[in-house]
Length: 373
Image (cartoon, rainbow, N blue to C red; front, top):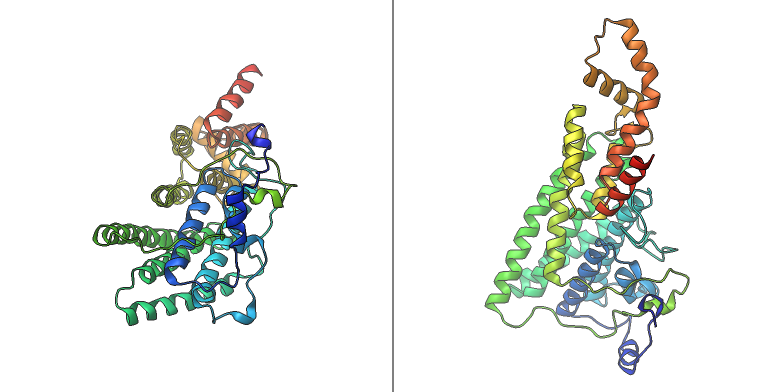
């Protein structure tokens, strides 16, 4: 069969793994750490254009119902640590998905959008997620203090603190918030810087613990992830097979995201149209930019008729014409000619810059269409 059309045959080993799924299973901290690290790999693989069905939705906690509220707190590994991290992860994915929905990315080439979204724990508002992370952090800090260097608790605490700042970055860089709150960009960049520091320390902690303790801090839990979950969502589009990133590759992906998202601040601060030309030309040669970063840069450059979050499109075009042609403000006739030209020139510049944000194959196709025209 064509692998892209195969919904996934269940082998006896698959059936055995599925039968071990138990939402009420009491999780130890090492088991919780294994699930959290696997979910982190799923999330970062999704940023590499994989489908939700290949990544996020393979976790049964997302797709087989919510955790019973009545048992919250009894199963500490699940209720006090795993659940807050999963909810916060879902919220992060929601902000990325909202950016994808702005139609700056393309199915098959950039990201597998699918036909529907199942769940990102959307019933939780940002303050609710913050409270869940606060409770998880307090519990883990107490575990670290009481048990004196519990490796699983320390690594989970690192995941909680990093997740808090990653969520702050993604929520602060939402274009709607950037447009409404001028201080949101600075706050996001501070959170991004802090996240970079925390991430570096987390990598060092993983390296030092693996060298000093041959036994891994995490313990695998059977049945939590269903690699063939697509059979439960037949309405979603067929997808190409893909492999999950390793934990090391996932951390490398997060490091790339942290580094490349600083381009947003640089783009907003550019004052000269000539600088914008050089910025987007350099961007067009970056084949390693992930879809979320490219989409966000396009949205920050032009959205809702405003350029760089603040300038009306007509003002940007007029500024570009004056800068290129050195129009004298005292020359009324030249001013009128510049105004007449704005309507024709605006879309050409915007489309060109947007094209330079696309992936290389699409850049070439659009460029050939322009040449043909």
